[in-house]
Length: 114
Length: 114
Image (cartoon, rainbow over all chains, first blue to last red; front, side, top):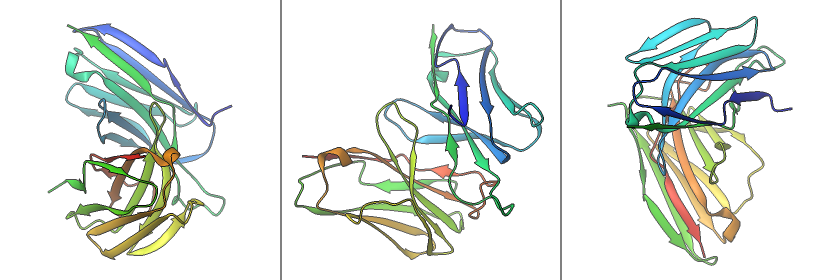
C-alpha cells in the first residue's frame, strides 16, 4: 500500500463545476503539500499545510491531521485549471526531524472542458 | 523574485557526451534539490544541498554529479548516461532543508539520451 493515496486518478469536469481531489496518507507528517503540474511543464507549489484550511483565489485546501486526510477544492473551475495535481507529505523522522524526502502521491489528472 | 530558472530547457546527448544542467535562484533559499521525473510518474528526489553542502544523495549513480558553487547556483554534471536516464530533471529550492518549507520548482530540463 502506498503511503500517500490520491483519488480520483483522473477527473473530467465541465467549466464552472466545483472540484474536489482527495489525499490520504499513512505516516506521521510535519506538513502536506499540494502541487500543480501542467503538461510538459514545471511544478507550482499551491499550498503547504500542517493544520486547518488555506484559501488562495478559487483554490481551497483542508487537512484533518487526526484522520490523515487532505482535500483540494477548486471552485468555478476553468479550462486553465487542467493539470496534474500532486499531494506530497513531509514525514516526521524517527528523531522528530522533518528533513529529507517528500513522499509523493501518484497525482490526479484534471481536465476541465469548456 | 520568486523564480527558479533552469537551463537548458531541452537537451539531447549521446551516451559518451558530457553535459551540465544549471539551476539558479535569487530568493536567498538555503536548500536546493534535484529531482528526476519520468512520464506520468511523480518526481523522485536525487540530491539535496543544504547550506551549500550535499546533505542527501538518494543512491544516485555516479554518472550524475551534483555541484553547488554558491548559495544561488546548483549544477548537475552528466557523463556516460544511459537511454533510461531520459527524463525531466527538475530543480527546486526552499528557505531551508525542513520539509515544512514550500519548495519552489523550476520549469525543468527535458533530457533525451540517444
